[in-house]
Length: 316
Image 1: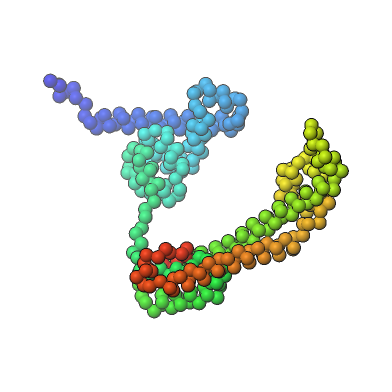
Image 2: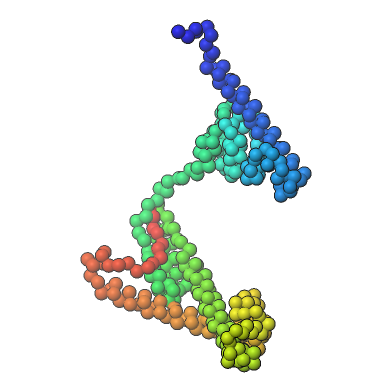
């Protein structure tokens, strides 16, 4: 039977553990500062610093994290709050918190408490607020109509003003508009740029073909290419080198081939024409879908496949 007179109170065990945790935290901070000072003196890429890592069996990744602990202003300002932690990794995790997350952690730590990893993780978790508004209607715009320019800026302005009137007339509703219409303008410019790049590449290939056709070296190579080294293409090593140079400076690359095919205004016009053709295809598709949608009965509408669309939500 245990002698009650020899038993140690739980509070004394807690005191011993907390004291050792505090000593451990102090030791880790000293180790962190040592790595920080060594990094400042020798540089973390130096042989001297690498020898320290090898001798102490620390990896560079761990040493880097410890340096962040030593450099942390928030740990220095609140040294009393974080005087007892479960491990050095908790100290490092604290340095990664945003200001808002750090404030939440501070608020959760009681006086003299041991700071744990789970407390830091909880502080990182964002508090999500429930939206009291629920969606009751969706206004959908045909994606093909957008890309086919059948729904333009004037249509958007009209729709926007009507929706604003609804918001003014009826209380307790909120209109959530997405930026899809603005993104469509960016999409248009990206499409034209892609056509421009494609046309430029095609014209450059034509310029290379023309150079080879009129080059004596390439004519000789074409007549007897066996066991012969390919000639250079103008001042380029090969086609890949030529294309790389063209991407960097198309004007100079075309000129090196003696070609006048590169005309920015002409290529831009061709790119816009290609995009206009693409837009017309979208418009035709949107009109086809519109005719089909008007041909189906209300009962069929629910089961008909939906066309791609953009939404404006009405929430109440």
